[in-house]
Amino acid sequence: MRIHPENCYTKVMLIEVKNLRKTYDKVEAVRGVGFEVKKGEVFGILGPNGAGKTTTLEMMEGLKSIDHGSAKINGVDVARDPYKVKEMIGVQLQSSSFFENLNLVELLKLFADLYNTSTQPLSLLEEVDLREKARSQVKQLSGGQKQRFSIATALVNDPVALFLDEPTTGLDPQARRNLWELVRHIQSKGKTIILTTHYMDEAEYLCDRVAIMDEGKIVALDTPSRLIEALLKRGFAPKKHVELATLEDVFIDLTGKELRD
Amino acid sequence: MQRQWRSLRALTRASIKMYFRNRTAVFFTLFIPLFLIAVFGLLSNGSGGNITIDVTNYSHNQASQQFIQQLKSVKAFKVEQVSESEAADKLGRGKTDLQVIISSNFGATDPATHRIIPSAVKTYYNAGQPQNGQTASLVISELLDGFNVQLTHTSQPLTVQEAGIKTNNQNEIDFLLPGVIGFSVMQLGIFSVAFAFVSYKSTGALRRLQVTPTHPLNFLIGQSIARLIIGFLQVAILLGVGIRFFHVHMLGNIGIFLGIETFGVIMFLMFGFAVAGWAKDENQAAPISQLITFPMIFLSGVFFPTTGLPAWLHRIVAYLPLTYLVDSARRVANEGATLWQVRGDLLGMTVWTLVVLLIAVRVFKWE
Image (cartoon, rainbow over the protein chains, first blue to last red):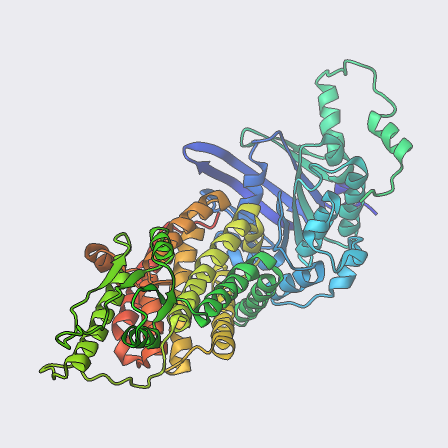
């Protein structure tokens, strides 16, 4: 079901980012970032904390002003028409929080109203496996459930592109894998997904292409397998022999894939 | 345009729902004022405010009995007959306002001359709290004047003609209700907005709204409309309880009263938004909200008239926003004032609203 980038060069560019720059109090957080995202792919932005991933994303989402450069989504310039862009995209913020004292259905309806659209809250909740939590409040959800609900709110407007900022940070292995499956499921429905992460296994598993950022710049951009290939060609040899399984595989094998929330 | 309208309605509805599901907010804006009204309403129905007088009578003649009867007939007096030592003890402990001693020759006549023997009624009052005692003492000397006229069969050239006039008896609860309602309006405007908004800001709920195509102002306007509706209901409930259960007299137009209080909600909303817009989190919002509201609770005539304050302070507190609100509402309720008659207060509230709105716009930060 995965769309391999090799097969989709003919696909339309959905997102075009050119030479983005952002400066806070004389500190350049983003220094000339540019990339393109094709329709239907999962594009990952990797990098250590403070690399400028979130700032880059927030400029593309119209949440932060763009100091220099441009970002176009589906042909619409974010700086020129942020509201039009916001209508087309779905966003999960890094630490999403919602109004208190409203249940999940009420929140989804509220978000649908904000997009001037209508939604079927229950089927949306079904999609993120939260159907039975329909009448709960966000504060009663576990970490993984919160993230899944946050993705549900980002889907109310049936967006062309979904932005996920560190969707699995702080989740246990089961919840993490569960969220990966959700991301793949959403991709299979034809959505384009841009996500940031600092987990390499996550990027390797989910992303068709990744951009590695450091100190506000993209230092590499390609498919995960080609990036690894290139590294090996440069003469890199792992210190230890490659394990055939990781400790996480052991953990999952022993505790199962079942969600614990 | 249509979309903005729809999201405004949705945000307003959500704000109202969230408010009524927030037990703390409902407790502070509705139950605390109701509790205050109930307490003061019950207190003012009791026999509070009487002047207590202890009388020691050494005379036991008809004249002294008659005098004591007259004392008892004064409505503001609570008269008890006790021994001199007990009376002195009670006065010393502040249990009575005035001690009265009638000497044994009170109203007696000299058997030789058939003239009345001069005799003094002694009164003692607590010098530490002289108001009640001195007042009572004056009334007693008035009563004695009357006796003198009777006994000597002379006429006094100058007298006072008294007549009780039936009025809409203003009692303490009549004074208090507009104060408590104004207080609750202030709490609603400042606290409910400052805390709700700041928590949305610090948790990131507000940021989440900013990645939707709704205009951020819709959120502020929705919150304001929700508070106006809640404030209106709150004032109506408090006023209704006051009138129905504590027999508060409403001399003015109820519509004008509600209108003034609603204007009060708008004015204090501006304070709420200024605090919420400036503060980063609850730790900043809480003390600044307290700093604004706390002095006004005591200086704006909520629970007692400001006329007792030193003149210089009295002049200053007249300009406080809560003073304008409470004064105008009280004049409508207690004196039947019209809008035109309270225009000074309304002007004051308008100025506060505009000035604080400007400050709010200046200091406002979305995150």
